[in-house]
Length: 285
Image (cartoon, rainbow, N blue to C red; front, side):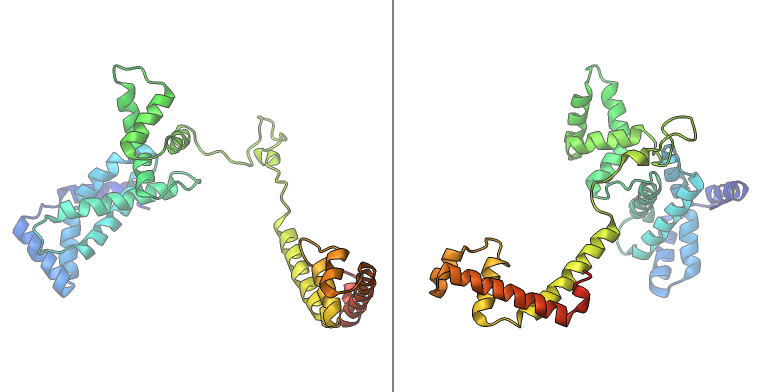
């Protein structure tokens, strides 16, 4: 970041830099584009720094240092120089304006608040134009309610009224720390204390996931100890979401429901034995 004195010196030098005539600007752009002439790039950049400074001043009401905005605008200016086609009938200042503004706006959106705002073109337009439109509508002859104001702004910028309301609340109040006490007393509760989630902690979620995966592997290995009929009964009785009835399985397998029950009991015993023999830690789990 530029220090105050050095920043003022830089601004004074930039404002004194001579303008470029169209022909000279074209020659410098061609030298930079075709020969990568760094001196030509420097001449182009210096002669357009007053454009960067004037645009930075327009964004000073967002509370960020003007020197930082100038630096970001300079980045946009260099980006414009890298993309500029001197063969097009366009002055470099006209082409560079978009890149300078975009660079400054991105910087403002990144740093204006700890809460990241929308990055779509509509959201950017809402962020940078809401104050201006709100002031313009408020000075009209018609008395507008907040709902009417949000509706007119949403129509003008092509965003939803909910987005307008949310952006208005962000622009109307500063960020608040969750660790700030609710009262002046330093021992007072913090806002964070009232944001208790009912969801399990991340380490609990990970632990449960690992346990489930491990038990699934154990079960798959143990199921290999069952014969085909036992496996069918266990899968349809114990591992199916619906859980087939003894009667239904008896009809399917051509045996009585009591026989199905007996086979199920025996299969469960075999499963338990296989689980313990293959994985001694199963009992601890």
